[in-house]
Image 1 (cartoon, rainbow, N blue to C red):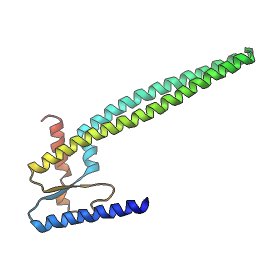
Image 2 (spheres, rainbow, N blue to C red; image 1 turned 30 degrees about the vertical axis):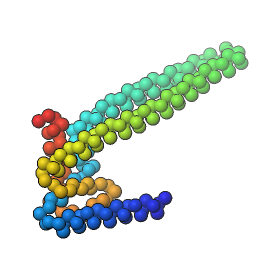
Image 3 (cartoon, rainbow, N blue to C red; image 1 turned 180 degrees about the vertical axis):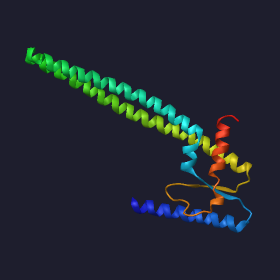
Image 4 (cartoon, one colour; image 1 turned 135 degrees about the vertical axis):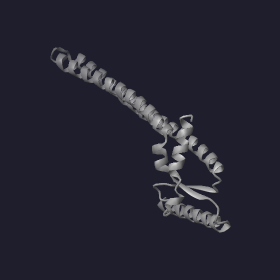
Length: 180
């Protein structure tokens, strides 16, 4: 699997170099620029708002979990206090009730984790779609022939800073988001 990933990464890099070489040879006046995608997403107001909304949901989910944990802890305390006066049958029934609540909690936590992951993925994809749509229009409006994206994966090893339009894109994207 690692060999395939390495081969694909190298192939993608070679294709990028070919595209860049082709564009540079076509016309030195071609507009070839790049953005820092991590910076763009971190500074985009739409992403910031989406993350805040997700955090609010996450806090609510965690509060629900904390409440259920507290309920189970209370059941355990009650069980331990009453245990000396209980029959063996009552002890077994009480423990079974607590264990059932613990299983329910574990299922709920798993459901919340899955829901949170799905919500985060959906939120991120929606923002990425907004940004990508914006970049297409921004590229056309500014007559860019290609906008590359610098990522932590290292797709762009070196580029002159003058080709970095991240700040301009962030400003224009945030203005659009804020309706100005």
